[in-house]
Length: 259
Length: 272
Image (cartoon, each protein chain N blue to C red):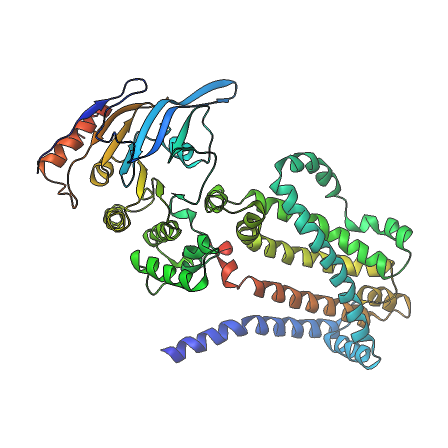
């Protein structure tokens, strides 16, 4: 019985692997049978990734992209979350600031590319600034909403036990908003990863976004274009798995249940 | 056992009940009124509430839903300032919540990010570690949560969460407990068990308790005195002393007479 159960679990876990394998085979067959060359097959793409690794570009570009995301995203988190918490905590700020936030929000971070190049020139800073812009508002809004949704009973209970304003923030407000902040961080990291690739296509000359544009411009190497896309997808998946593991922390888990 | 009940009528400012001594009087609410405006209309919630509670007494505030009894409890606890009158506890005016008087909300008041131990220890950060550990262990035992020390509230039943909240309140050794329909969200069997538990704890710790409920049976089972409140704007309609020793026989004549007396006062025939 236990054996059957664990065998069943194993097949459940293998399901996505099987599905991806089937897709790869279909991709391979379709690519091999095409009369006009529209898409490189999986073997060409794998060879492309191997070539990048051999030339030392794989590590260089992945590191360059991750470096920009790390700086832009971390700075946005360190400024945006406290800012959002403060704004959410003192309601008067919120009514004052909300129109401005709602005007800035629909402007795609990519619309800021010309401005950021004007301010920072072509280089890392421009890309980091774009990621910062893309991450700052979503994190601010997440933090604002998280504060607004803290049940009054928790704040009243905290005050009842004689907590000062500072203790109340550290011992009630912060743990109460943490689960929602983790979700906000996970979604925003996804956005940041989208934006870094776009920014690298224009504002810098390294990274996975640059790889895609460069492979097309310099010799129409579509195997390297798709290799870049595959790498972006795989790293995105790893980032998401990493952020998801935070949701398993015991003191956060209450925030994700139905109850 | 003799029944020496007086159903006292409440006039403006004065009412009669058994406790008159300056020494035992712990809480005084004088001329409490509460009103607010909503959509331009003045809504009066409470009107001229006068109430005294003695040390160690168990008082139930009883009234229909939405009558303002919770508002009165929140005023007494210092969460809301009344628009008229004032509350004094131990001679000093209430200006805000105070760890000497803990408010017990419905079961949702426990902190979901802390374990059972963490919740009980919440108000104990100022005391030395060895004493803190002792107190946690004591109150875990008192409310029957042994074995669940490191469990998060999410995994506890409604009744266990409620007991946890009572333990968290008692752990800071308050003078008074304010309970706002604490068993309202529990099923009727758990509710009966919880009443017994609360009385057991009250007899062990002898805190002053003010307990808000809309359940007549609950009030008569628990309280030394039942303060019957009218519909909004709430006034104190009467104060009923329940002079029956615990554990109370809820099919005894004395109990039934008191219960039916309150039913009549509220204007309900005891028939469905």
